[in-house]
Image 1 (cartoon, one colour):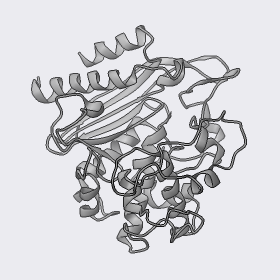
Image 2 (cartoon, helix red, strand yellow):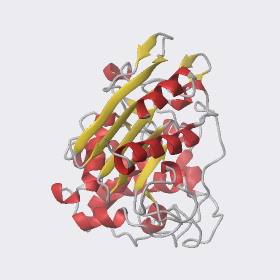
Image 3 (cartoon, rainbow, N blue to C red):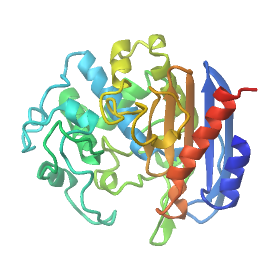
Image 4 (tube, one colour):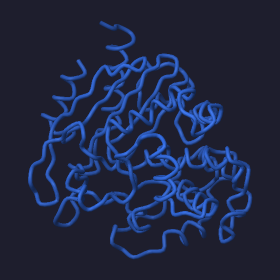
Length: 341
């Protein structure tokens, strides 16, 4: 069912291709690649299990969230600290790290859109942004808050975000194919994203704000593989088996707070929209998605992890990825949990 569905998506050009990884009780149940893409030189490349993807907003939970938790566990920051205390130019003094992690800061979802090559001072725009809600009152998913957290990490650690995450998160957790700023020799191994003017973007960040921030931001910019995202997922499903970040910090981040959100992650509460996992997954399932077409979802109760990486924006930004994710994750739950072979 799952395999046929993905083949059909590729054949019908809903997505150019994908890599899907499924694990249950630490056992790999499914790990396959599908489809192809056109690279920066307009040459066809097949997607394989090792294809590198621009994971877009998975950056928020793969880089920014664990970095914040690590710094908090070392008492180098506190989750109730104000952003202003790290970034004095930020005029909204009542907003805390915790507000940003839960997306209840009152910041707008985004900045006005500009072409990726339009010169702009993204940080100044964010620092000067007016709130649209009172901090702590309303959930509104915001790239801006996560970009601010990236800067908090830099201030607290004294390192650039890409350096800090590589040395303190990615390498200690064994995510050796995960990085900001993909090296030139690996760019050809990356699935290209969107057509831009006269070429496909390949190996450079797709997100316009992150591009203007030199490819490094707390909201987007990370490149990774399905295998690495699966390793990342295992740290959250089995926190006792890692010793980088205290187990209770990981569990707390993946616990529902309000409006189907934990810290950084979406967490299914059983109420409201069914998120991108459809109607079948149990309460307490948590994960995140990325605009390019990426996602990672975990169910602690079922010890299930699903990594779905695709470059859906290859055919343009008007994609069916939200519908596809719900259908795919429902198929997966039916096949591996509800009606296992």
